Image 1 (spheres, rainbow, N blue to C red):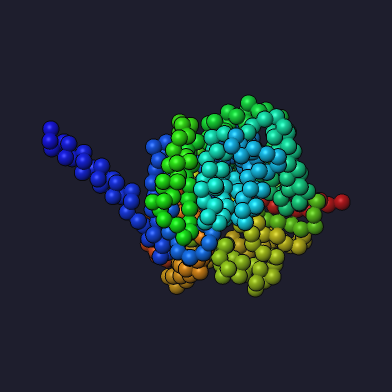
Image 2 (spheres, rainbow, N blue to C red; image 1 turned 45 degrees about the vertical axis):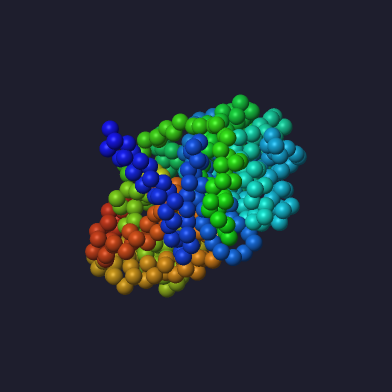
Length: 444
């Protein structure tokens, strides 16, 4: 019996040491603690300055929506800036309060998460903790607030559709994914659905996803982790909300077909859209795909932009509009805008020919080394930036899922060589593997 007790004590002590063992991130010490209600708090002690970066990463995005509430995750991003029980008022109470104390605040919603981030004075940290805890637990969700915010989101959607390129992306987007895929609908949702939201739907969504055990709080600044862990316990520790995590089964898109491969737009530019199935973070080919994609399309010195844009001057540029990271397989979307002309088919032919040439000759180790060096240089240049560090930690916590893997991408890239990269590139970047949509001006 004594042996079992001793073993349990050792395990507890080991876990405690692990939880408090700091991780070096770009020269700063990072600590974490998970409260009893599931809220994980990550603190990066970054000396200097009078401001701190505070971010709350909620593991809810448009992937969690069902028919009837499409657009709810994004609208909630807006709703969360309204008043709460202890901090009531008119308008965007949270924004006004943060700005009044000399800070900055914003948020964004993606398929996979919703992130609230603010830069605030160090001497206002307790107030910020109190506000964040109250809107997690006691957000005011009445009809008046709903009416105002869904009109705001509706106007945002209308303005987006008035931009020809944004509308093109929306039109293409609906043709991409099979019906049961988590990314089936664009993050902003549908206007007619948004205007029909009810307060009950909002309350149900809030109760289901806005809970401590579905959130990670990150603080970067001239702070002490022990102090902030106590502050977090004071303000968040009493929140009893708890959600049941349900796993969305992965959906393959490798065999999916694009519903429509030709579009017309009311704008005098032609685009080719390259739609390439992309592995999710954690899948075996993920890092090979990202590096090959960047070396071919997305790097400042990438092979195809250099040839098509810089040397041949056949296109205005190459634009990637999709995220590198995703929890599920997705489409990498790369668009090539060109002057509308009958001979543009040669651009596709040149790209296909160049891809074949790359696969025959292979990538070279010098390009891979330069790619990694560029990423490492970007990290060092941003080491002073608290927002950058918080974002680095948040993405690692969401996608790996552990902030201790903050440098996992570069570590995995370093394991690739020219031979293995060329082998994986053939799997994803041959003409049989991706689709090209042709977006042409409306002909009068």
